[in-house]
Image (cartoon, rainbow over all chains, first blue to last red; front, side, top):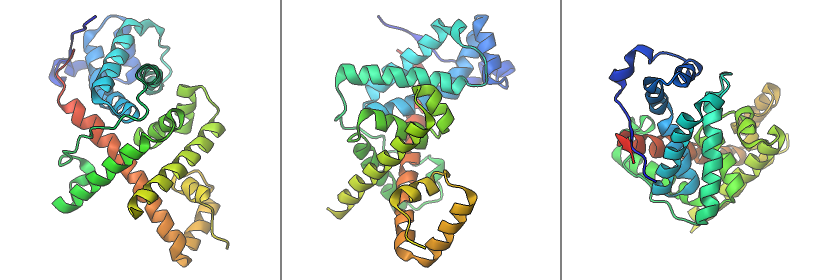
Length: 201
Length: 68
């Protein structure tokens, strides 16, 4: 089945562009395509970024992102506006990524990292050589991240790449915050050890 | 003060310690180059993770006009 979902530039939906996520979802429930477009503009990078990091495959990540936004449209009446739209969306992304990962058995897939980093805010003030080193290091960390078990990788990604709070991660994964904190700590320790080992070689 | 375990340095960087404990660790880092170096390396690792969020999401999203 092929979907064609047209994303319209920001100027089309200027009038409702300043609404909160919850207000946009209310508009969405009334069938507003403009509200849908704005939500896509706000969250497309976040969902896609999570999926790429988790799956290590850009094509599959795009597939997941498409599914998440289509599900948002198709199931728009299921969301209860409580100021937690981001968590709601990330929950869908989290479950779909796990399903795809199991289906494709991609835990060891190597990532084709997008290395063109020159526009990144974090890299703006660095020299070209420093930028290159930063990107190389991020690339290395990404490949090491894929060596971590699926569940822990999801926790690390949600926490440190997506910047979600433990409360939000708990809501997404349906696991207690204490368990998640312990898992994040163990995961980071494991990642650090892998990283340190790589640096010695 | 005894050197903190790695788990505690992670919790320090993750903002999961009490303010008092964070202050104690900051004092310790000022006195112990070994732990300070450990903290800096972990911070570097976290920055790399954070950078992935910018690169992978934004670079990909920039190019979208349709999802097929």
